[in-house]
Image 1 (spheres, rainbow, N blue to C red):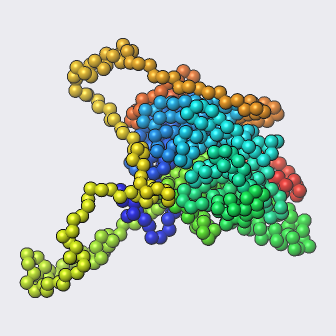
Image 2: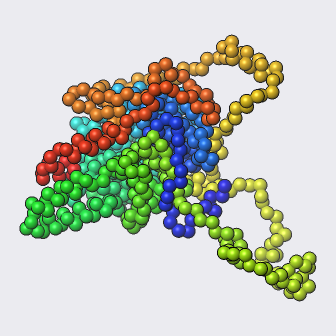
Image 3: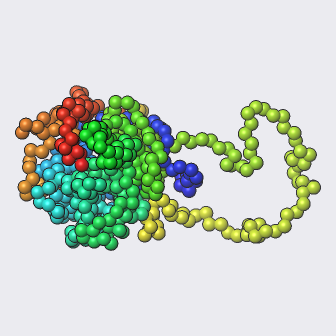
Length: 550
C-alpha cells in the first residue's frame, strides 16, 4: 500500500462512524502497533484480542489474565506486548506464539504500562498510591523513580518520544523531567490555574512527531507544551503552554467569571459560576494524531470525541456516539485519520467519508448524469493517425530509454522516525493465520501427529518466571478504579474476570473463539451512573465546590 496516495489535501481527521469491532468479550482498553496494522484490545475476561486492522478480522486471541486487562502497550518492533490486569500483575507476551515470557506481581493496582520507545528491555509502570517504577526485563530488576513530595504518591508518568526523558506529574500539579538512564532531575515546573491554585495531573501524552506533549489536568483543561522549552527553562521554570484546549462550556464559564469579578451582583453570579464549573466536561483520555497536528479528547461523561487543531487551538469536530454510553479508551491510528474508541465493551471506528472521484484518474474524464450519444472522431480508432504531427523530443521523451529500477524498495517516510533512514526489517506488521480445514486429507504424518498429541508426548511449555516487586509504604488493600470504589474502610469489589476452572490458553484460531458461561460483563455504566448521581446529590457551596474543582 502506497501511503503517499492516501494523503488528503483537506482535513486530516475523522468525520463519521465507520463500523465497530466486536471482541465477544467486553473491551476495556486498546492500542495500535507502530504501523497501525494491528490493534490489540484488552477485555474484561482477561483475554487480549489482536485485530488485523486492514481486514477488520481477528488475527489472534491470547488468554492472558484471569482478571480484566486494564493497560496494554506494543514494543517497538511489534513482536512483544506488555499488559497489566486488575489483580496487580504485569506480563510480557510473545505475539507470534502467544506465550508469556515473564510476569511481575505488584502490591497495588496498575494504572498504566509503557514500553521504552527505543529499548524494549525497559517498561515503565505506574502503580496506584506509589511512585512510578521502571522495570528491566532482562534481569527482572526495578528502579523506583524519585518524586517531588513523598506524601503525595498519586503520580502519573510517561516516556518522551524517544525515551531520553521521563515526565512525571503528581496531584499538586508538579511536573518533573528525569533523565531515563540516571533518573537525575533535569527540569521541573508547576501547572497552575488562573488563580495561582494548583491542579492535579491526570495524564501526560506525547506526539509521535515533533516535541510537543499534552497534560490532562483535573480542572478539565488540556495544556499543550513544547518539550524543548521545558528543558530550556530548567528546574522550577515557568513555561507557558502553547495551547489551552477546552470545550464550549469552559469558554462560557470564563466569560461568566469575568462578569462575576466586575459586577456588584457577585453572589448571584457566583452561584451560577459554581454550577457551570461543576458541570464542566472532564476528559477520560487524550492523545495526538499520527502527524501531531490534531488532538482528540474523549469525554468521561458520555461517548463524545472532541478534536482540536493543535496549531490554532480551535475545535474542528465533535463525534457523538450512542447516547447513554460511557467512554473507556481512545486511540488514534499512527498513520491514517482513524480513531478507535471503546464504550459499552465494543470498539467503535471513526474515519473520513470517502467520496469517489473518477476524474482523478484522467484529467479529461467527465461524469454523466444520463446517457449521451457519442460521436466518433474520424481518426479515433485508426491504427496510425495520418494527420498527427510528430511531437518534438522533450527531456522526458529523451529519458525514456533509461533503465528504471523496479526491484529496490524505498522506505516509507511515515514508518521512519526523523533520525532513521531505513525501516526495521524485523518488524512484525501482520500475523499469519492458518484456516481450519473441515476434511483434511488423511496422511501418515497427520496420523502420527494426532497420536502423539493424544498420548500427551508433546513437551510441556515452560512456565513463565514470576517476580514479586516490593514497594515500601504502599497499601495492599487498594482496589483498581475499574472494579469499584473504596468506602467506609471496606472495598466494594465487583465481580469480574473469567469464571473459575477456565484457566489455560486458547487456540490461536480466530474462527472459533472459546466461550465461557456466566456473566462476562462489567457493569461499568451502572457504577459510573451511580457515581455521577451521588455527586449531583451532594449540596453545593461556594467555597467548597471551587476549591474541590480547582
